[in-house]
Length: 165
Image 1 (cartoon, rainbow, N blue to C red):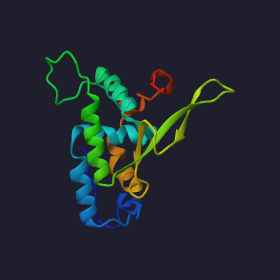
Image 2 (image 1 turned 90 degrees about the vertical axis):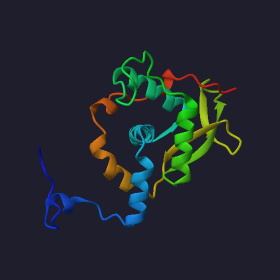
Image 3 (image 1 turned 180 degrees about the vertical axis):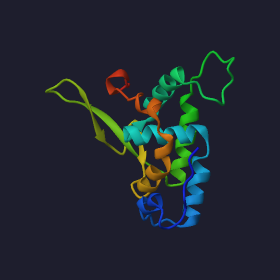
Image 4 (image 1 turned 60 degrees about the vertical axis):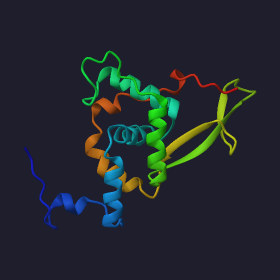
């Protein structure tokens, strides 16, 4: 077991970035992410940068298939997470200004024949990302909780079929 020294001359403390967040902001952030789905959403967002709800649902289900969560019964034959549950947690984090979103439409590129993302106020898809202002603090807080199992569940955009029409 290792211990961390909190003396100001500790090398670990000296490497902590000088983040200008009040104690209240940090406490509020801890309270908000203190939920299994919200914690995992942040993990996936740190790895994938920006993602929509459907993509998150697929990531959760791929991950939980390999690593069943502790908070679900072992008798359960399915570890899937429903899209409404993910949306509810995204909404909570957006309300607390932890996440930002943008609406996306898909437009077919005539040259390549592929659909490409275009930011649009009337877009059908909400893409979420971590608020840039809070990103350094969240990265610093979450780094110990991103293990190899999360890094191996990399999102392959071609694996998800989005209804773009």
